[in-house]
Every structure is written in C-alpha cells, then in structure tokens.
Amino acid sequence: MSQTHTSTIRTPATRTSATRTLPTKKPGPWKPVVLGLGLFLAFLLVWQLIAAAGWLSDIAPTPARTFSRGAEILADPLYRDGPASVGIFWHMVASLRRVLLGFIIAMLIAIPLGFWLGSSTTFRRATDPFVQILRPVSPLAWLPLGLALLRDAENTAVFVIILSALWPTLLNTIEAVRGVHPSYKNLGATLGTSRVDRLLYITGPAALPGIITGMRQSLSTAWLVIVAAEMLVGGQGVGFFVWNMWNRLDIDAIVVVIVLIGAIGLALDYLVASLQKVVRYD
Image (cartoon, rainbow, N blue to C red):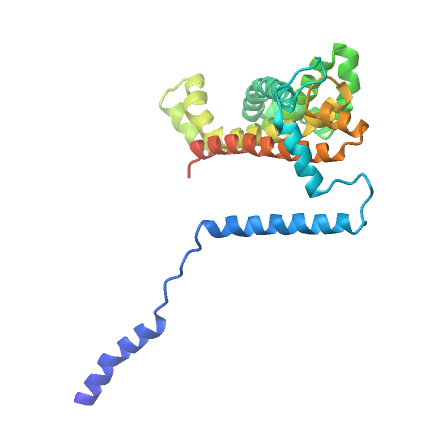
C-alpha cells in the first residue's frame, strides 16, 4: 500500500517538472540599433569598395564625397543669393508649404465627400465610375492641364498635390463609414438622436481610425509627388534643387537631398502615425 501511495504522489511531480518551461529573455532595445548600424556601415563599405574598384561611372557618388558634400550643404542652409540660389532649408520649406497646403485642401474635400458617399448607397454607386476612372491617373498627368488652367507654377504644384492626396483619404473614409456597425446607428436612432448627433458622436468616432489611415497614405503620396512636380514647375523646392544639381552633374548633392527627403518623409509619417495611435481603439 505504501509503495502504491508513494507512486501516486510522485507522478504529478514528475509531470510538472517535464512540462515546465524556462522563461525567455527578451532582447534589449539596443540590439536592433546596433544591428541596424552595423548593416548601414557594411553597406557604406561595400559601396566604397565598388566605387574604388572602378565598377561605377566616373560621376557616380561615393560615400566619402557624399559625406563631404553633405557637410558643405548643411554648413550654411539659410543663405540667400537670389530667388533661386538659396540654401537647402528654404527649398525644404517651399516643398513643405506646398505639400501641407495641398494636403489640407484635399482633406477638406475628401473627408466630407467620403462621409456623404459612405452614407448614401445611391450616390456612391452613381459616382463610383468617375472615382475608379480618375483614381489610377498619375498626378503628373494633370500637370499640363494645371498649367493651362491656372497659368501659375506655384498653384499648379499645389493642384497636383491636391489630386494626389485626395484619393487615399476619400476611399478610406468611404470604407470606414460603411464599416460602422448598423446596430450603433440603430441604437442612436432608437434613442431619438438627430442625424447630426449620430454623425458627430457615433459615425465620426467609429470611422476616425480608418480616416487617419487614409490621411497617412495621402500625406506620404503628396510628399512623393512634390519632388517630381517641382522638377517640372521650377522655382524653389527640393525637386527643383535635385534637377538643378543634375544639370550640374553634382550627383553627390543629389544623394544628400535624397537622404533629407527620406528623413522629412519619415518625420511626417511618424506624426500621423502618432495621431493614429491616439484614436485607435479595440
């Protein structure tokens, strides 16, 4: 009896020890940073070795020359020697002004229109062919038409930004409004709330995460398009700077500006992503 009793006591302990798992140690936050820095340095080393081996053209940029040119460009970013001869800071400001102006105008059009089309099945079906035809058109295809209609390079650049930023937010707003659960709307109607209150306190908050997602896509698209638009319309701006440096065959300066464009685009995306985290709910 004692042996049988002892075995019944030891068996659960044996099973417990067999199924016990050791705690996993989470990697520190510095490891991705070190890995990313190592990959970046390896990329620069390979780039420099390829350039030194003569595998690239004579005007191809190198890490050493790009770093030296970047130090020159950033040493005096605020200089002004004329309407077009200005520091990189003023080119960035000109591009950001056009992007933000066009983005705001596009949002003022896309969000109310998206609420309207998302709430009305009849109007959404009536306008869907126009949306599907105009949406795939490249924003730069509208540039000659904008110049013909507006006769002003500055307004044409903003016009192109509006068209490029309009569609992502419009489509996301429509789908976000359509995706609001009908029980929420029915509950509001049952409680006797007005249509405006249902829009402000039920449909709006429920659709807000989808709208912010569209705004994030619109802002990224606008920042992509502005470079190509400014190459054609001229004046100040990062696109004009890149085209001007190409005419001078200053490829190292172009690489510097590409890095700055990417950094500003990352900052803009981070700002909208932070707003997206605030309005997100489960």
